[in-house]
Amino acid sequence: MNLKNYIRSIPDYPKKGILFRDITTLIKNENAFQETINQIIDRSKKYNFTKIAAIESRGFVFASAVSYILKKPFIMLRKKNKLPADVHSVDFELEYGTATIEVHKDSINEEDKVLIIDDLIATGGTAEAAAKLVEISKGKVAAFVFVINLFDLGGSDNLVKSNYKVENLIEFPGH
Picture 1: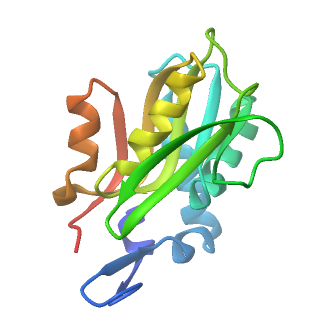
Picture 2: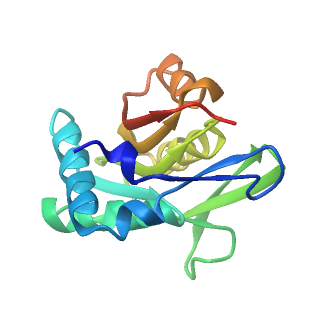
């Protein structure tokens, strides 16, 4: 199954000049969604990990299913002020400003190797912040798995240059 066929492209969203890669058409098709989860699991088998983390919010869709099937704890990396207990925070740059993601301080420890899952990687700022959260928590990043890589925006390559392992299911040019 070619998962690329299930991604809708929407021009000029969220602003003019952006070609948005929409995963809702993939997840609403039960066969395409199941194949996506199976491919994530297949790609992740080569890594030794104890927990799965996902970046808010579309990463949650994929990571929670993988976590359930693999019987691994699921850690949410959330936007600022969304987690109720003590948190570690990392600020990072976006194409259109800055943002913050957080993790509960008791979610990850020095024995944990964390697989980070997200729907898409573009420039990589959010993924790098996720890695920092894992590391601030004293854990290790086992690998990243992205459903979509916007390859010409360089995020996946930047993670590899920083010695992270990266898996991408689908490749698209970024716009």
